[in-house]
Length: 162
Image (cartoon, rainbow, N blue to C red; front, top):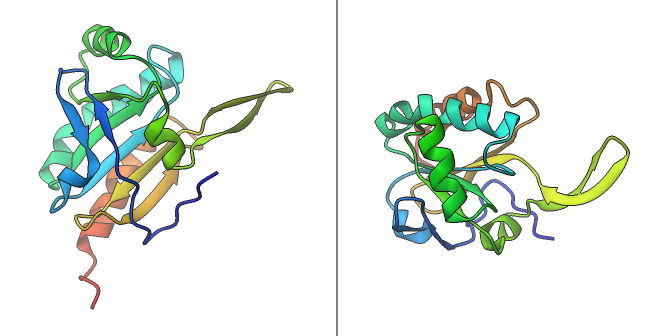
């Protein structure tokens, strides 16, 4: 399993987006990127999380960041999910878990005594140079989007490294 650390070069990937385009991480160089990985469309927690990120999408944009949600659901499910809740940000389909596994997020989980493999809900702030600036595990869903936005603002306020 891959383990990424702050300062590591983020793994490159290309995934289809729900608007019919695609997203390639390396093509975003020159701008910060926020990737938030979530387990599935239209579940309670994932709906709350996506709505919070969607509500703050303009603030991420104002900081110059590209914001993308990623889950293993297919494009068709993303399209319905986005329309159902009026989400204002792109959702990427990682059906084959290309980015999910490259970022080390497909792990053993435990829920109610049952063990299974699943996605660990995490957000990554990628700097304009393609390096991981911060990663934040979503220990509490409500408020996670604001924590990521605050962390992005702090990272962008830091003086450039010499």
